Length: 178
Image (cartoon, rainbow, N blue to C red):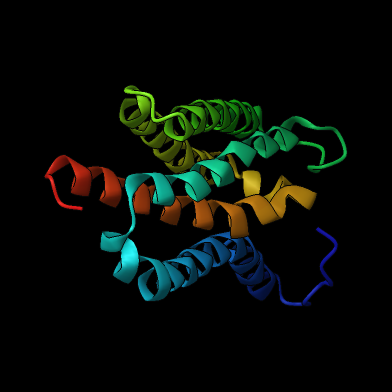
């Protein structure tokens, strides 16, 4: 991957293994930091916010998940991006974006199906992210991320934390607290 030779084949192999874990470190560190932000600024105020006021920014954010299609765009990822990862990640994100936007419209209009649509979006979106993380590791896709590296290193952690917040709000509203 264009890294300078180390000289010692054993050490070079150890460093390559370390380089292959950088994405995982970025994903975990960014998730922890996004959770810290949520814990400091969002979760303490959540009980005072309505379903509508919490869901609008989250659903708007997730409506941008069409950006996951860049895993299929020539020139964005490096040649050799495993299809085992690229297609499910791209299409799963597209489905999440469509579901988020449909839920957004329903929430804005206070449609009776709004909560159900948020549940469907949140379940599909969460499962999509978990599947993408697993498929990244199984396929070795981290080596081919190229310009799309920011998606799992920065974007996915923000999405994971907002999915968590959505589950908290859905559960809170289900048990009747405000």
